[in-house]
Image: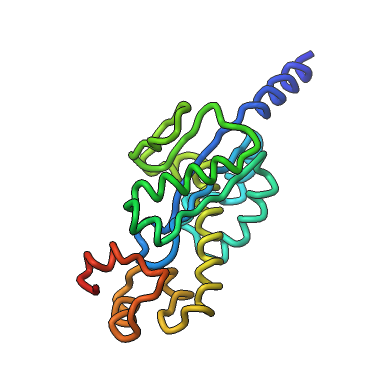
Amino acid sequence: MQEKKEEDLQQALNKVFEVGIDEVGRGAIFGPVFSAAVVLTEKNKSILKKFGVTDSKKLSPKKRKLLLPKILFLSSDYGIGQSSAREIDKLGIRVATELSMIRALKKLKEKPSELIIDGSLLLRPWKGIQKNIVSGDSKFISIASASIVAKVSRDNLMDRLEKKHSGYLIFKNKGYGTREHLSLIKKNGITKLHRKSFLKKSNLI
């Protein structure tokens, strides 16, 4: 009888979904901002925690790449969205980030009843229930998983873009405004994928 109760409880827990969302590349000066949404059951959250899933910034690139297939396999659903450098320049980074999040959410098979979002900013276009969690990628496995999915997806794109836009060390800086990257812009000029609105602040254009 006790076993049956535990089994029922386990089944109930497996039906409870946590939907976490996070973005990456918000502060970069080159390329899109990426967002990922990941849907996890209680059971799979604990499995991923044992695998070492945590805030993507605390993990090495190798560890993130190893965790990615595990996250995708154990997630009940996931979606990835992005917003281009052109959209960032036209709309501003906050609106463009929200757009990438909405695009990720639209890829889910079902609309989540509740979202947990990393950071303090509301996802304004979202009409459902949402909770903002500061440092959420260290506190919630679904947000940590989303941060890894978004980070590996964006890094993979940066590696591919290196071939088209060599001369900026994109594979190394991942589009962020390192001193080296900024000096290469001064030397080689800006590309279509550089965020002009960000470079204006650096007085590079």
